[in-house]
Structures are given as structure tokens and as C-alpha cells.
Length: 106
Image 1 (cartoon, rainbow, N blue to C red):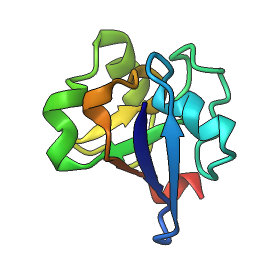
Image 2 (cartoon, one colour):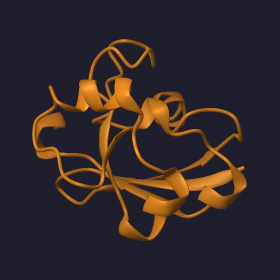
Image 3 (cartoon, rainbow, N blue to C red):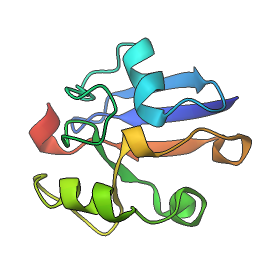
Image 4 (cartoon, rainbow, N blue to C red):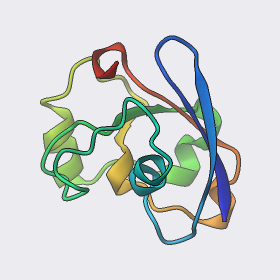
């Protein structure tokens, strides 16, 4: 299990306990975190779960695969630390993960 902190664009924080094997998106949906809409349900077919990963966790979450990168190409405000939260699998070494939501998802 990992504690994940989601930060809305206005600075509001939501910390949740996420089960290993679930996605960062699934944990947000389960806890009703605003700004993670997940319109496609985690199928990597939209970008409504776009997040900015804290720099200290970039190596742990890794780079997006080709399919995720294609979806990020349609997202607003993409940065070098952008990921789709549906594509980040929760594991013990993500304990303390911080993700921020872009302004477009408020």
C-alpha cells in the first residue's frame, strides 16, 4: 500500500491510501478526488486523468509508453513530468507519491 497525495490546481490536497496493483487513477476515483475524471475508465483512451508527477518520483513511475504518449499529445498543458494516472501502477516504492492536476482539469 502507498500513500498518494493529489494536489488540485488551487493547492487543495487529498491524501489517500492506494492498494498495490491498482492504478493511481483508480485510487483517486475510489476516494472521489476532484480533477481525475477518468472518462475512459482507465483504458488509456482519453487524457482526463492527466497529472504532473513530482520530480522526486519520476524515475520510479518511469516514462510513458507509446500509447500513453499518443494520448498525452491530446492533453492540455503537457510538461516533461506529465503522465496519465491510469497508467501508473501503485507499488510500495511509490509511497509518498505526489501528483498535481493541471488547471484544465478543475
